[in-house]
Image 1: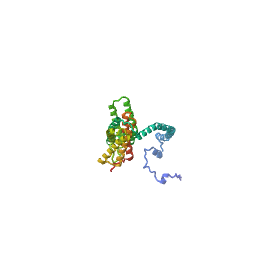
Image 2 (image 1 turned 90 degrees about the horizontal axis):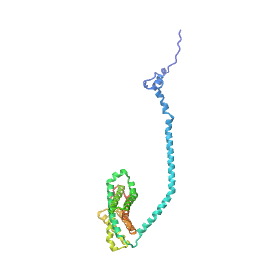
Image 3 (image 1 turned 180 degrees about the vertical axis):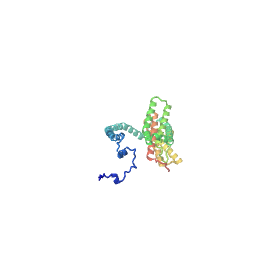
Image 4 (image 1 turned 60 degrees about the horizontal axis):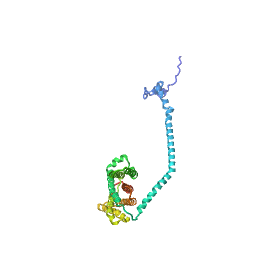
Length: 327
């Protein structure tokens, strides 16, 4: 009788046949698992590349390098701030020492009411051509605010334009005109340059104030125009009595503003305030001319235009609205 040896039970026979329907014969891992074939060399070589120590550490090294650069930058900034903190008080003291005497002299000139000879020709030419310069500035302001603002907004912000109008443009205008004057430029050339810088100054102010509104604004050149007309007519009568000169020139200017506002309707608190500020600027310039009558005419004219535009810019920055204002 033959004896049969029992074979071990096939695990697949206990759990059922192996389902190979979901296996992809083209997949190397499938052939390895089912057929016992070794993985191709290209597959075996992938793992070391992906976990290579150099690749893993590269971001860490870059992060450490960036950290070192940031530390150096912060240390440089700290040293610069320490230097500024040490030197700033000295610089401010030097500036104050240089400006304070001039400011005191200007305040004394403004408050001075003593009788003195009025330089009639200087006053007339300063305010007459100053009115023309302010008209050019007003034209530049209107053109910039309504026509050029979309183009200028691509290159320059309104706040930056306001800063340029307050600081950079007056300095540039003064240095440019002074260079022409020192170079012996003809009066017509100087006048043309004054008109150009006034129009450019007004254009920057107009762009800075675009989309800023008050109910009504007085005419920019009206104050200078009235002063240039009223004073020559009144000086033969009032003589060199300074309070009378100021009262006639500035009073006539305010009266003209108020009459114009009452006739044409833009009579409001903003209108009155801005007209008063324009008149005050003219008064300061008039007092300065009486105090220092020997300076070049363009000095007074640039001061008149620059101060008037600065007053307008400051007033609109504080009291204007970003939408149209109704009475």
